[in-house]
Image (tube, rainbow, N blue to C red; front, side, top):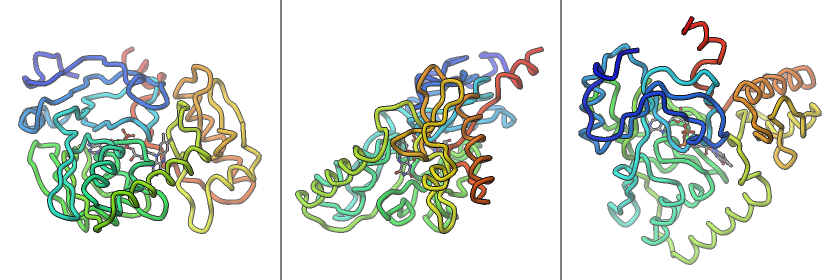
Length: 307
Ligand SMILES: Cc1cc2nc3c(=O)[nH]c(=O)nc-3n(C[C@H](O)[C@H](O)[C@H](O)COP(=O)(O)OP(=O)(O)OC[C@H]3O[C@@H](n4cnc5c(N)ncnc54)[C@H](O)[C@@H]3O)c2cc1C
């Protein structure tokens, strides 16, 4: 790609060849060709407006649903910092949340303001931008049930507000435009008692703790639940519990989670996922679909590019 000099001037941080492994849950994978942390909304808009339209752009939240391939991510990765992490009350039941705000912050501010209905975000590691894109959900509620609308900076730098209905939501999927960055979202809950909301958040946390490897290097649910099935059960029935490949392992605790247990490369993790898909297909006839976003280039593709 272009030299630094040909990238637009920014007020925030712009770093070349920035390692992404420390920024994602799996702690594996290559570098971003460029990593941009905008100072504020105007900085983000100006940068995208002036950036060569052929340069690919990808937003990154907490990397809790992502395999960054070992050859890294071409173009610009955008990470929203503190300027985008505020959560404020709009009215009795509505919150405005910055695209970089965490689920814990959103659910805590909701509780403080007596807003029930977003407790589920307490249990999903990630940012509002990631939740909106992925239609994140847990315990029978998902983002599409609480999202009013969101503010999005498009690849050309323009700022638009997209209503819930514009996002084409299905299970763990939205039709957010390519290269778009969610900078804010409004979530609507219902009136509730802070104590009751806290109790629900505690119940959700305890249930998570019991069933998921929360302190591991992982990417959350690997595969979407196929219609009429539970992905973890299909994986288990195919004999994949604890299966390892290189430094990657299928979690013993929750079989729809892959783990980086011993300096796994992203290639190990992705290959293990593909092996699980193959065994599940062979055992049950069901084709599992990846939920985890796999981004960037393999090490082989990168070395071909640089030869
Ligand atoms: C232990 C664990 C438990 C989990 N449990 C659940 C669960 O119960 N339910 C569930 O739904 N998910 C779960 N996940 C997956 C993950 O937490 C969600 O998918 C979450 O929405 C990802 O948010 P993120 O900000 O980290 O996004 P990332 O993982 O960084 O990115 C995911 C996708 O969102 C896009 N994205 C990120 N930020 C923005 C933005 N600002 N604008 C536009 N696009 C953006 C990325 O480009 C990418 O396509 C779990 C993950 C872990 C590790």
